[in-house]
Length: 291
Image (cartoon, rainbow, N blue to C red; front, top):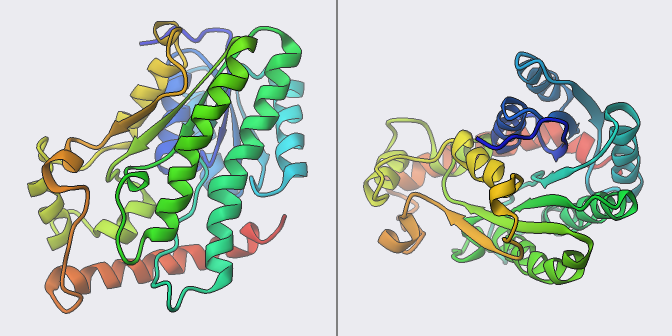
């Protein structure tokens, strides 16, 4: 466990999934947490979990696609918690669809949040780290999808591959300032986004995925949070510009993809859960559009 006492972590999309798991883990490691999020209900839940470890939790409403909101959130973090030592660019969205049918807005939302949002988060955090003169640690969440794709997830894959490549360039740019930056490529993790793709526990998609994964299970947010804890701690002092895949071995064992007939049981379940994911997106869409 990293000793992060006296550190402040700025985490985007920390109201659920990997972001929430990371906030809890870094709080357990001793850091205070700034939760930058559009889903304020989820942010409140995360803040309560952070405070259970005796750490300070700040909530800042932030749409990462807005430069002004990201800059203001970073300033608010320093203003209330005193510093910005760690940044985790986690916020992201997924939109599936055929190139023949995808709406421009679905494409643009992914670019604006998954690519531009990561750029704006890293820029704001790095600017303040350089100004403080104490270096820093940044982790960007990419995906297994950066390495593999299919006929429906190509747009999400494109944005996540972009994250991995940006991190390589940023490492060269920020290293002289004492800032380490790395990317993580999670596989199938138990998050709201993954439910849209992999269905529920015991369902045919989950069963097939678990059978294809050498470790025999899907990932948990705490798995990714543990790796982030390492990357922002002292033991990763000589690591920067890396893309670390954490997928339980599924890419090596199954090529990182699950192929199914749309009319099969798996195909039908995936369609149902993608619809559920679209309904969750519809709830958050008005907040996404406020930039």
